[in-house]
Length: 71
Image 1 (tube, rainbow, N blue to C red):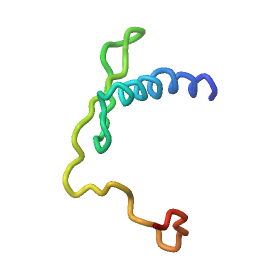
Image 2: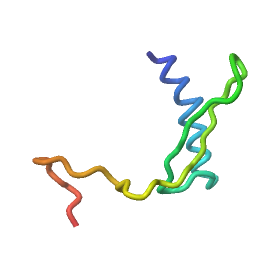
Image 3: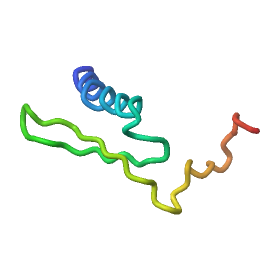
């Protein structure tokens, strides 16, 4: 499991973080993850698309859950 975790971190999390830091992906976008190439040369691609109308910014509250972030 640890080698898989390291691979996910290296190939997805690190690259996705860089895209966010450099402004290639912005808040409110949905990120589409794809692949480019095959075999040893395959790489993940990340593309931001606008969030469709009607999609909430956050999930609805869970009934009976405690909200610690009260305004």
